Image: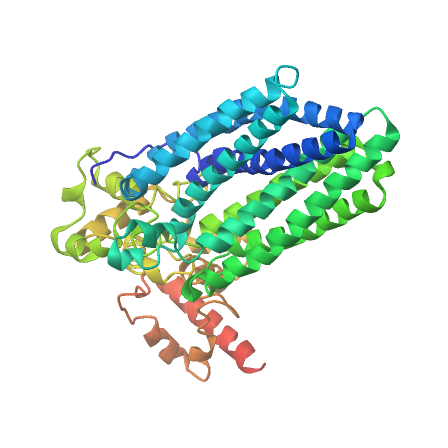
Length: 500
């Protein structure tokens, strides 16, 4: 690993969401709004709608600073963040799509210049020239989206690129087209939400109601197309990734539920503005706009989390390690490949293999998973990471390095004995032991449930089963008291499960 690790006490996912969701939200609004602007301007000029033209002018005054300031700065912020969080994946994307990035930046430059000239050209340009600038702005912004869409979707579905290495196989990947339709539809939805807010500034109530109605109709069209395209996107995601949603992966499942609920809320809200435009108020328009931001965030969170444990599916894991490097690390060790060392082998292993998704005791903490356990348990768990519920990358390195990391984690974990924790919490010791040592891989009634395995077994047979050890599950290494309590708890679980 030729890159050092940027270790701060903040979750990397939260940092990415802070910059990424805001940027794409504003960017999609700018694209859809660009189309809405020029179409509305053309219609207003054709029918002599002075009030409508004034509305477009007010909206364009908001567009230029939004594109230049919020969009550009958060876009630069994304580059800083991804370069710090996962330099390996960022480097791979640059090497693979360097010309696509260059073309996108060219489109973005044209977009910025056109936005400035459009916003400042109302009194300086002829109507035809002004409309032409609006079309240039929209087309450049949408082509920028096309370029970015090919790169972003590549990370989820690289498709034939893995075998061919072809630029076009990677760019025109399986989710490229459905995602492009989806994002174009989102642009229309965002334009409708922002337009509805700006429309409420119109002084004439009749004009205001007409503009609110038109923007609500645009927003509903975008929402409907987005939902249909999202079904298409999900159908193109590899089955092995989608099958993990809700079983092994809880984050994309929660994101999907949030997306569905907010889709219904947006449909109701825009429908009310469509049917009763005179009742629209600035507070409700701001509320719908906020819902749109969270709705978009739910989609982006799903898109990012569904590809776990990969940064680029089938190519790079989320921690930046190559998928095809496991054999070499197991033979030669991982630590010799780390070029920037801290002097603490355990910390180096944690930083390079775990820190991309976990902190020790903050965001998505890893230490609670080892509280009250021991180094043998931690070392065993590290050997079965790829089989755990959360779909983590497998540990990369030798057995000795795995022991180093296991001991390093246990030294920092809460050492309160599980028996004492059970007494403090007034809980059954067996349930506490099961929760600490088993439940992260074996959810009763859910993922990895092994209850049926113990049906009909005697205490001695259950006890013997706990001594078995394989590459995926460590042998029980707790105290005798913990083991006996766990045996009774497993028998109770089996009895309860067998009685169903």
